[in-house]
Image (cartoon, rainbow, N blue to C red; front, side, top):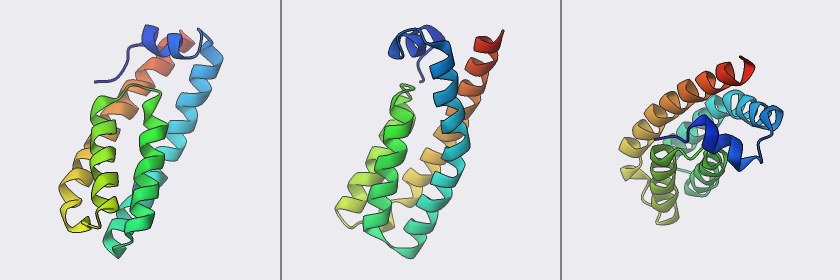
Length: 114
């Protein structure tokens, strides 16, 4: 579940422009971050997977997206342990959570613009 608009605004001290800007950055960057993460998993590059999962987790953290954070954390932990073979289901879950989160954030942007 992601934070509602009131909670998101509280995280940026009510600054609607800042929130809109942070959302736009996430919406722009998240797809490429997922591609990089998937490629690193496929290459078996645990160090890159760990770094990219951590970056994605941090980027989504502002938005209170518990499912996104949990999936990214699971991937990060697996990479730390060198167990990328077990990462695929978590990566699929992360991709689904990012789809949900981006939809939610697009709705937030629309409400902020109204």
